Length: 329
Ligand SMILES: NC(=O)C1=CN([C@@H]2O[C@H](COP(=O)(O)OP(=O)(O)OC[C@H]3O[C@@H](n4cnc5c(N)ncnc54)[C@H](OP(=O)(O)O)[C@@H]3O)[C@@H](O)[C@H]2O)C=CC1
Ligand SMILES: O=C(O)CCC[C@H](O)\C=C/C=C/C=C/C(=O)C/C=C\CCCCCO
Image (tube, rainbow, N blue to C red; front, side, top):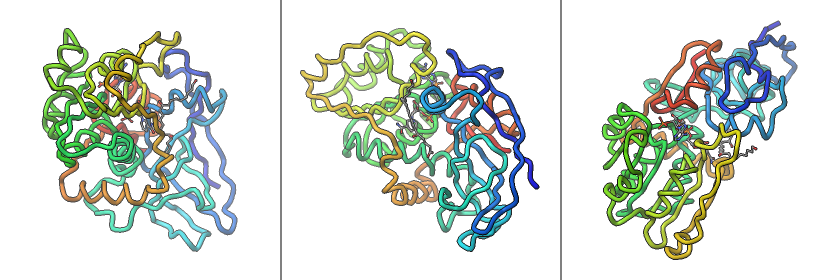
């Protein structure tokens, strides 16, 4: 008999999540039946979507939603061998049982030198968000200028580098000087700290006087309201996330976007990465190839120990991460 540790959302978040909103519990797992597998989480992901999705999909007492890289401890399913690693979507749990239908094996040929946690970041859901958001939603073309916010994070850092790989100029912003230095290091043409500039309007104009063809928006709110006025004619905006609004208790007002949308004939499209998962294999293959070739750099903010899941989640929402926020069990 295996006992799993799990984190539940004890109380719905009000405003910014607090550690007291979470509770760690234990779950006894049943013995394996034929066709089933026992898995242990090795790395868990903490992601911004957990904040709005908790409100939409969860009730108090539910295990926190989320994905992990897990190792197969025991297999009674001939399609899976013990010792193999998979990506699963089983929530904040140390151990769990699966019948294999909801597991994705790490791609064949995963290099020994690469951390398997990248399957939750640059070569996983956030990397795929950048890939499909930029190439399919923004329809980025060589020679264009791309703007991305939350640029030093899991999605943004890949957006900027894919824009460079695709032959574009890229402008990014982040919330600290060390993040801005990181953006320069990974090839951003222009980068600024949105917390210390005096005028976003002036900063965006200076970074690209001719404006922006593509805007990959991870933040929403006031930033997006100002950035939309800097789009070029026929510019495209991928509405990926709205992290500046996730912890609001009172909805933000405005903006009124009709004038720039009409006069510059802009396109603005929201998207959810999983809608592109019929092409998941293609995206993972391309991202892994660029990582192996050294064209796509990665950084991970690793928090040790399952017990620290809430702290890692809250820290990521506060901006403590450079690159992908990961918990190592
Ligand atoms: N549509 C989709 O399918 C998907 C959407 N997303 C969205 O993409 C965005 C980025 O996700 P991800 O890369 O995983 O997360 P990140 O790794 O970028 O971490 C979140 C970052 O957001 C920034 N942030 C927090 N609060 C604010 C704020 N009020 N204003 C501006 N920036 C803020 C912080 O960086 P800083 O220090 O720079 O402030 C923080 O590090 C999120 O909005 C997320 O919901 C992600 C995956 C899929
Ligand atoms: O890795 C996986 O397979 C899980 C991924 C799940 C998820 O779909 C990935 C990203 C989602 C990002 C969502 C971003 C948002 O900004 C969500 C916006 C609105 C949600 C509605 C909330 C309503 C609350 O009142």
